[in-house]
Image (cartoon, rainbow over all chains, first blue to last red; front, side):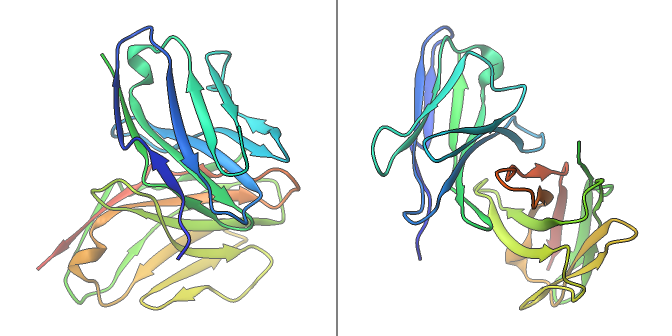
Length: 110
Length: 116
């Protein structure tokens, strides 16, 4: 069964550093997303990507964040100058109709 | 903006029994989708069931079924013959049917415990 794959599963970074979270969406899906879940809280939408551009973004997705689809398979989330409050689980998802999620990347900013 | 409310932070059920998780939502749209996702301790988000708002028939997926009440904006999940592996956090989610508006709005979740 096709699945969304995320790497790494866990990333520890120092405050102020840049991180890149990577995702390989399901190959025939057209829509890609990033969500985050701060520990103990609900899952929050960050950004969606369609036809090689951002189609929607939330107020959380400010200039600190960017997304890219550098080739035909990968979809990345870059977080510049990480802050302690960026510590969360980051989920990539892809869809045509219903969204399928990756297993998540746990980001810890120290 | 749409909102999704899950009023039961925690629920428990005896193994083999039936449990119903509640979800209400608020929207001004007439066409949309509703979902239940399961998040086990591994924290992966797993799609359990989906309902299209234009369909009157309630969705069913094996032991999982929904009670969709469009006028009341209610979307509850029933788990029959509960199994230990059903223990997880369950999230209700809403998605507009509008073109290019595909983000999911999640509720705050219900933690389900299955008692042996």
